[in-house]
Image (cartoon, rainbow, N blue to C red; front, side, top):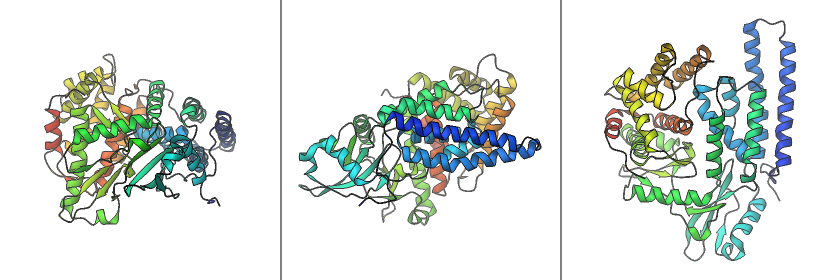
Length: 451
């Protein structure tokens, strides 16, 4: 009998998904009209407060509807919420953030049919699969399984039906919804943002490519014992099913991790940063999804704790021309070199030569804040700082002051921002007190390796 807490079906057809989003858009539009009438005689301050309350009240309905739709609607919202911390109004981000919570799993009877189609009866007979999902997300869910012949435990990442066919219509519907609700700033050139999201979504539903990236990371890290990469089992993998070894580990915010000594937590945080800098400055290849569930911790009695790296669906390769300018902008921020910073920012199209000097200065100040943990040669307390709140406030001030002049960030930065924010969150979860400046400078002075 189906568990009532699980989804027994997914609205996978374009008609069903479009109808759900149309209903959500209509209800929100009606609510907006009603809200405007009810606040017609209110003061501007009261109207702003009630508008914020109204949008927050819509977040639950928004999250529930998209959570049941699964697929790219939910995933795109999650992606935009990470990006929107600095460039979208707080109300818009409030709604998008509501999609980050764990979505309900799909009933095993539905997922079993997908496996039968993808792997066939012969291969399935070689496995003993646990019907209870050990993880569920927007594009698929994970089930633990045992290879009967070898007693090896693996995990099967199974894609929900129809998600790859709905990407374009889902993005169009989400964009229309955000525009209708006036949650996309008029000055924000969102074409390239949604184009980048689309590219990543297409990549994330290709499990064969994810298998390739998983093996590529294992090869690049080689014997580095600080990190564990799952082994891919190609014989049980397809474009919509990915089989990898089951790797034990606990959540990074688990009490056991929090109770580790300061030294061990600091080491885990530095290892995370070291990996990120290695990806960005040596490989030009970055796993851009910093979701906490993608990083488990394997504790070691001797203190040599490891990071278990999961999910390589959102790996993005960056061209050397982009990385050269991006590195230059970071280097200039570290050295407080405004001239070099401006050159790099113009090359990346954050700024234009004709931009107002005040805009250039404000953007420089914003980037100065972003590299705050690395600005001085001393320990930085990630747990006690209010840097994320200050950055959000600064970003929103930039939008308010220069709404018609501010340029949209380059598309390449969309997921780098997401990963950078995730690195900060991981260090904060570790309660890290570390000096990351020497580590960053070491990589800034290294040449780019060819991919």
